[in-house]
Image (cartoon, rainbow, N blue to C red; front, side):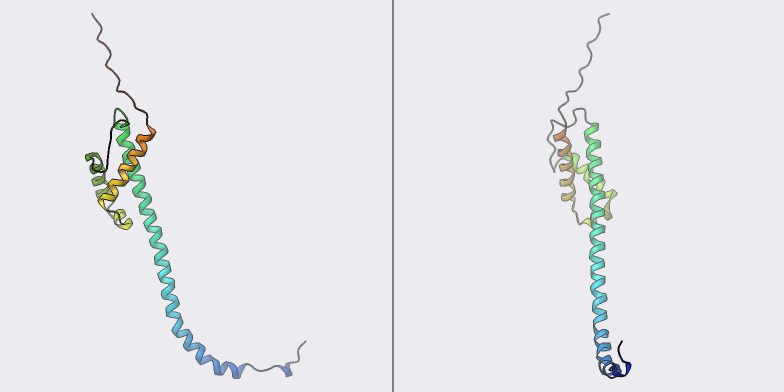
Length: 141
């Protein structure tokens, strides 16, 4: 065991160093909090943007799926590009339904149209061409 009479008192050292440590802490603490706040905003912003992108992606996929399902030929043989009126209608519906999400993701109308055309194209690629059913011949009476 150590002999207490041989111990060096830290009180004089602490008394000399303490004012400097306090001043350094007073200077550094606001910077530390500012950095932490910046990191929190950056992390939260990434989360919000990703949630908005996921919602936009799901909406575009649902709209494209509904369009393909409603078409008699599954749109397998049609060419639907970004400038198509069908894409413009879906893009305007999305702009009205999801304005906050589009703003949070930083997407323009052209970006939305590209996403929609891509979703339609993806579905078209997986479809086979289906010929519309022919009308049954009339029976002779």
